[in-house]
Amino acid sequence: MLDLCLLLRKQEKTKQKENKVCKQLKTGNMKTTMKQLAAGTILALLLMAANVHAEGKDATKASSLESIETTMEIESWMIDDNIWNITSSNALEDVTEESLNLEDWMISDENWNSIQNMNNETEEESSLELESWMTDTLVWNR
Image (cartoon, rainbow, N blue to C red; front, side, top):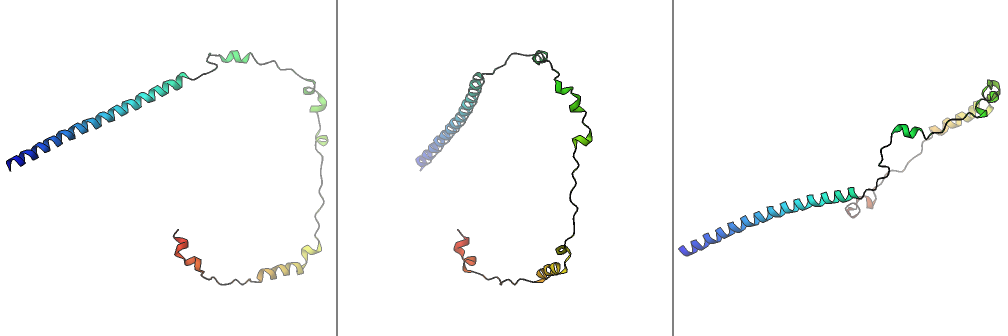
């Protein structure tokens, strides 16, 4: 019996040692994985930054860009009095519309009474009925 107890204790101690070693390996693997991920990210960023082919890296002053503009030239149409001195009577044309007239059909009682009679007529609808597909569980539980 004593031997059995000693054997059980030894097994428990070896299991505890194995558990400690496994925990250390797991945390060590996780640390290694995080370090590898960080190193890979930094390497990728460096490669991306090194492959940039930026054009126009030279610093330019705004005053150097202004010298590119050409001088403005006055053209003849810009100072032509015939273009700019147009009176309002020449520029705008008065358009008059026809006056609106009442026609017989617009004021006829027959036309308006027939429309009112149409509105007073009620249309009968058929009553609602349940159909088999409405209550079929196979239709609703797909």
